[in-house]
Image 1 (spheres, one colour):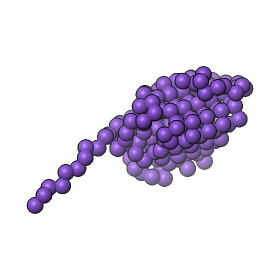
Image 2 (cartoon, one colour; image 1 turned 45 degrees about the vertical axis):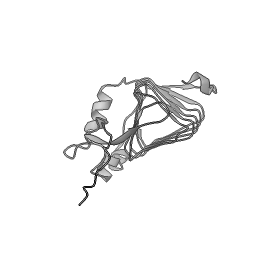
Image 3 (cartoon, one colour; image 1 turned 135 degrees about the horizontal axis):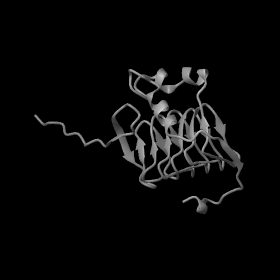
Length: 176
């Protein structure tokens, strides 16, 4: 009788309360991408950046530095997420939008059309919390004892001000 040998599975702890989960390094940039999430080969996920939950990074988008994309968020077109920005929930960031600094977004919002958001903080509303992926799927988002732990910990670390600026069309070469 032959024993079935399994390939060792890569695991990574995204510090979201779920412990180590199946994940892999992205081929373009080397950042961590959970097997439940998706990142196109044309997207750039920097070495320290993370994409997890059921998030998707599409097209020629860039996620770099220590940025985190999670939940059901979609980053597409040429959107640029960098520094210590955190995008969760069901956000949709597209076009040439740029999110940077200590920005924390945990809402169901759409950003695009050359928007620059830095040092921003969007608090979840009651409706956002009721639609939170952690509450909809007990295997995602936080510990089973307190679904809000991840959001609260992230919001405590971030700056309180919100700053919007118009952004002229940055070239892709200025993003790396």
